[in-house]
Image (tube, rainbow, N blue to C red; front, side, top):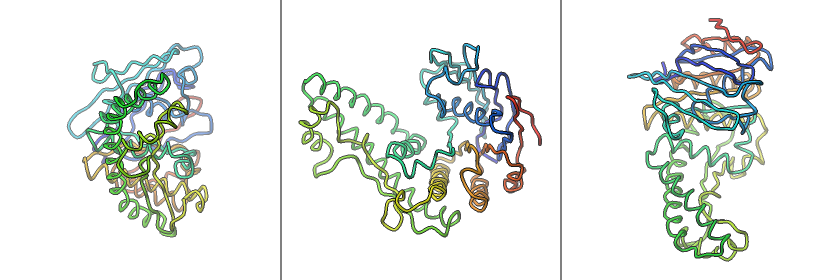
Length: 361
């Protein structure tokens, strides 16, 4: 059984989910129904509750139900020692109110800490073959949950980066911002590098179980600047170009996590399906590291599992998730997934149709 899980979910005015509630199980939860029924919207609601934003629409006006002025999601999180009440409300102007155990929160970090969420969608394969920003986000998600100092350093870096970029636009002195930016940037890069090194053996172990047919996959972190002497020297060397471009180039905001197979970029040699397999293995590796370093689990959201993995890898992936003892939500149209998900604890099954949810098992 998961050490923490979403024990209750209430959703009001999110897309076609006008007023629904469900009591998920602590292990596997299958959300079945035809396309357009509201299955993905349930995952979107959980993501909003934990992360504060939708993974489908940047603006609240696009996910608030037609004719409604706001969307509200409420959840009860159970841990080994307590129950936490968490709620979020978004209005048409994008204003957000977050409450935990009745107290209003000023930001999303406390909620995200209580409900770590891993999301896998049919578009997630782009994390392997696409641009570097998603891979940076993957690293930062892991560090947020295992390194207490990371969030503060990251916020300081973002603030100083904004100030240095403003100085570039105004033509003012850069050194007051460059020194602090370099110190924060090197701290971020060191944490990312250490985290990457910790993920490598866990990724290899996971791939051996999930996809032994693939050649060795390696991870290599590139900090976002080159040359000797650290980030401060790189910032000084780049000053003329930065002034010309109007923004700061060197730094961890341009870092890259390189995923390679036999020395070649993964995007050059992997099919889309294989990219999904490697992405799934990376997420399992992160969950293993989270458990090993903090003792905490996470909530895993998987939208349209058949589109993510073929039947063989699908079964292996679900068995690995079952061994991690995390709470999982899987959407699918296929009833046959129930048998694949039955790995010890029977799955809890929900059927969604026309925005209505009913428990099947």
